Length: 392
Image (cartoon, rainbow, N blue to C red; front, top):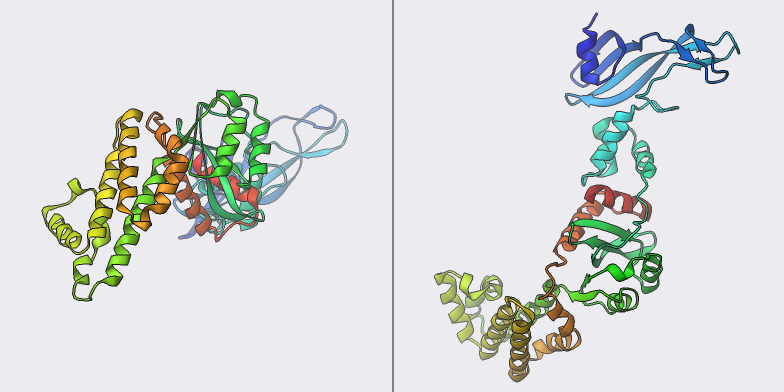
């Protein structure tokens, strides 16, 4: 007979009587029964130790050394002399009416916490995809009871629950996902925030340039400082420089376009980070067009503004940049100037706020991986559970 204590320690189960173990390259089969003990009748409360019969049951358990594991359980049923009822013995490792151990259920949930899709989890554990979905539906992530001191919001393209975009709320201070909302629409966000009682406790509200988010913050978070994440601001300047470069290249003779090979990376990099070779290439490119030279100068001037140490310094540098951009008369910078006229106050707030949307953007990248691996999610509840499992 196999060593009971050794196998029981591997299975992390107590009071097992191992009768046989069979294994091959893919599967492990363990035959066992439990030690016979006194049981209390669930019907009348009498104590009995009388066995009525044994019934074989095959249970799936967590893989052992990469091999699928099956437990052949000789299930004992007891007979109560007082009421004449039959009942099964207690086995804590197996839920009622289930042929999968609690440990395997938890392992499936744990694997769902990664970016694997349901089918891959099911194949790895040797269970059905519907079983994995049922375990996922057993999980309940309730709505949080209180808002954090720092709240960040962003949207992502989820295409779940009939909505094209979903919203994500995070706590950048503690690097945690606060909640996932089924829609980014104004009335959905209002309904969600309306129920919180500590709306006045929020100190910072970090967002991108979205008028709906700003209206929500002004209406429901009266004490919060609205902060525009600086990453979204830089993109307007880099887009403007890129558009100037494309315009200049189209107008050039093919013989001169060789100077612009792999020019995008050089033009968008900080000047002080370029190597001597790239600086020489940059000088040749800027000599080809005065507009490109001016656009590059504006980009470097904006990068210097972004490196400001405080709000006062940022305010002075931003004014200089706006004057320079207006004087340049480059139409590619018009959208950037319009953006700054509408949002400069909230952009300057970022120089007084120690938090950014970086964690939120990183979480959005992980959500994209989950969605791609799962080939999309139609059910929003399942999508929300997967995201929260992978980020909690």
